[in-house]
Amino acid sequence: MAITRADWSERYTEGRGFRRLGDEEKGLLVEHAPAPEGGRALDVGCGTGEMSVYLASLGYTVDGADFAEGALEKARTDHPDAEVRWLCLDIERDDAAPLGNDLYDLVVFRLSVAFLNDRTRVLHTLGRRLREGGTMLIITPLAAHTPAEKRHIALDEDEIAALTCGWTSVQRITAGDLATLVLRGPCADTVAVERSVPATGYAVAGALAVVTDEHGRVLLGWSKRGMWEAPGGKIDGAEPLDGAGVRELAEETGLHATGASVVSILTDAAQGVPRVTAVIRIAGFTGTLTTAEPEKFTRWEWHDVHGLGCLGPVFTPAANALDAVWPGVIPGLPPVNAYPTAAELTPVPGEPAEAVRLRHRMADAVIAGGWAPSAVVQEALRTVPRHRFAPETDLKTAYDDDLAVVTRRDENGRATSSVSAAWLQADMAEQLQLKPGATVLEVGSGGYNAELLAHALGERGRVVTVDVDRYVVHRTQRLCAEAGSGRVTAVLGDGGLGAPGHVPADGFDGIVITHNASDIAPAWREQLAEGARL
Image: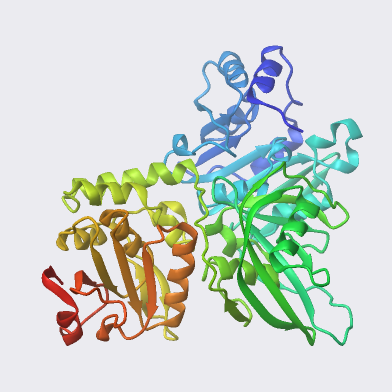
């Protein structure tokens, strides 16, 4: 049910509101979320502010957030002396910058969570804003006690199961027509799970669609089997693989693909039955998301890629399909044989406004530190989406100018590959004294550094990046295919030998070594153009 900001503002301006805060609810707050010394609370969908004011009376410093300015105007009028910071914020769609960087001890959704489309993403995003031991408290009407015409304000049991998965601790208290959910620990590990496979003497062949929206978020459905799944199903006879993914997407979600490519073929076995899964990357779509097969799925939601490791139960082929597109994004998956395709793939756009803001903040810090004096490197820092080359971590960490993001460890836990600190990558690019259209060799891959160089080199520039680790090269190829310029070539090989077969006639116009090196390899000197920098 689509309700706009204007609709809600008008509702509150007319004096209409939600049910009053009851004594039983107040008692639950005192029992399950007492205010610690200096405690901070966020009241999401605060309406006219009754909950916010009560939290302040318990000793919390309170932010009351609502997307309807009419509600906040009434809150200010009804509670002129309340020590509450009122924020006009759509918690689902707006950049959360107004919340600031301080952590909360309590986040409350009272009678508001049912109105969210992407409930899992929103709750997990706010869960990462909780201090250790902090509480997410949800008070919601139950569908079983709600008239049909008001079904949109309530949750049923399947929706509650989807809402609470991925949390370490879940406690439920039911009182009348309301359920109170007490959630703690917002990052329970994703667990790959199977479903029953019909007995057959043949292999099971299927296609799974991986589709992202304009914010770069990936679509998953909460199935009646109690797990997250990607759109997909069995291949129909001699149906093309990409056609099967496109068909299943439309049948299950109402979305119609405008471009689709096979990115990988996965083979494994389920309960002894051989299984072949085609991973179909959807480049774009039209239509309106809907739960077109309610007998199979409770709901569809868009999820942050960096949150895929904290979802709870995920169908094993779906988890492997996500890992085929963003290698390493879900750790600890069961083994699968993967056969990436060699097809040319068009980068798929999409990022949230928060990523843009944080990227500019990172660039400002690097520039202020004197690490990026040239206009081309400054522009590269502001343009290349660093977070898409570190999908394992949240946006704040990805865009910290002084942090390296480890992306690969050996069996002893030692870091063997990472996205280096942004200031260091900018400094390396500057030290190369790049010229437009140059060809540069990078020894030690990762993706982001190569794309940063490629952007600084311009449309005629080219970067060859080489690494000895097959996984790192595969990861670089996939992430560059997703978010790159098309001007980076990732090569598997011993970087000490340079990149034979890829050396320009006059040699590389620059070579950058991004791993520990005890000496200068002869190949680096031999493959370097006269007058160029190593």
